[in-house]
Amino acid sequence: MVAEMRSGAVAGIEGFEVCVEIDIARGLPSLTIVGMPDAAVRESRERVTAALRNNGFKLPGQRITINLAPAGVRKEGAAFDLPIAAGILAASGQAVFRGEGRAMLVGELALDGRLKPVRGLLPILCNAVDAGFERAIVPEGNGAEASLAAGIEIACCADLCEALAVLAGAAGRGPAAQEPKEDVPAGDGLDYGQVIGQEAAKRALQVAAAGGHHVLMSGPPGAGKTMLARRFPTILPPLGDDELLECAKILSVTGRLGEAAPSRRRPFRSPHHSASDAGLVGGGRSALPGEITLAHNGVLFLDELTEFRRNVLETLRQPLEEGCIVIARANAVSRYPARFQLLAAMNPCPCGGAGAPGRCSCSPREITRYRSKLSGPLLDRISIYIGVGPVDARRVEEGGAGATSGSLRQGVLRAREMQRSRYRGCAEYRTNADVPLYALERFCPMEEGARRVLERAQRTLGLSARTRRSIIQVARTIADLDQSPAIGPAHLAEAVQYRVPAGLGG
Image: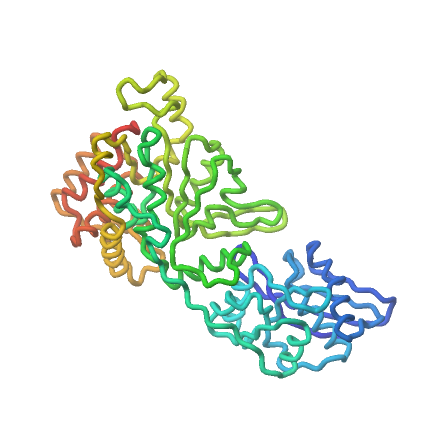
């Protein structure tokens, strides 16, 4: 006999349907799995055999062939255990199911029949919703993430027998409703009010947060670059519903979603400078997401930027421009989202004292070699450069808070609201940093005085087309912070200033 069960797998962070076909025919007792299974899938025959035996079922003493279709796509993981076990019982006549063709089965079996949670369930369920499946049977350990998939009936099962009962028509246990945790900006005790001085840097970071612009900070050790960066998430707006689902899919694929409800706080990733290119952009034998994908819809902070290997930094060029990363392997091509905001920090020279009289011991040649670790094309993709100088000792002793995260965030939220209204109907634009060159005239109108400032900067600085675009984008964000409908001369002048700050060179 032949039986069919429906399951799913993941490519990148998107799910796709897998048809599990089971054929039982005369022949020597055997169990063969075909359809490009990996080692974990092939090992399911041992798990399924033990689970069936330990729950009172018999494995047919015949030739059992299991095909995972589409056969030309590699299948990974242990999520096919449950549909394989149910299919064997259906094909051998030991169980009769109702509506199994419209049910999605996903789950790993323990040897005693318990259902264990699996990675990548949320993308599989989202695909099942789009494909018109009516219900899904999943391990109860995946209940929290399963609740995020709207439009499909979820049955959370503890073991094989419970899952079979649901397939036979019994009522299943639904997942507990999980409301996303609201964003609490200062919940971890960080606040820009704790940073003494550096008001110009705070202003520049507010502009970056409001428009989604990439930032590079340069300054001597101890000036406060890392302190400023660590507080950057406290002024970012919360994740929207679509962004929350995208981030949850990524966490599901990497097994980081867990039992807790996801948070609306934007991701903040800070990899060590020894990270490899595969660790940063993703890859490996299984082509898992890297740090830039984990930072999707959030921030990627690279401290000590010049200590990263140059080949690692160069891999950032494509995702910074396109918002995604494509990883090609011999057996598959995986596409991962990577729409992140780059926040980087570096010293101005090897000793860190450049720009401070009497503190730098580096020769001009050493400084040039040090800064050359960053290629021109990479720097051209950064919109805001910030020079962070040391704070005067008397200012530190006096203390006193300047701009706080709360005040800065209010301005960011107002500016983001203007952008939401402006780009309503344009799904590809979320912030000013997303607006392409050909759409600048439509979305970024300028006053005549601002045009003259831009023309003067073009003549003086010899701006590239990309740099010119980023200046206009930043100026549009500054205008949004002022709630201005058009870019004025002051907005444009401030945006130009962020391109050539003190301490970074040209």
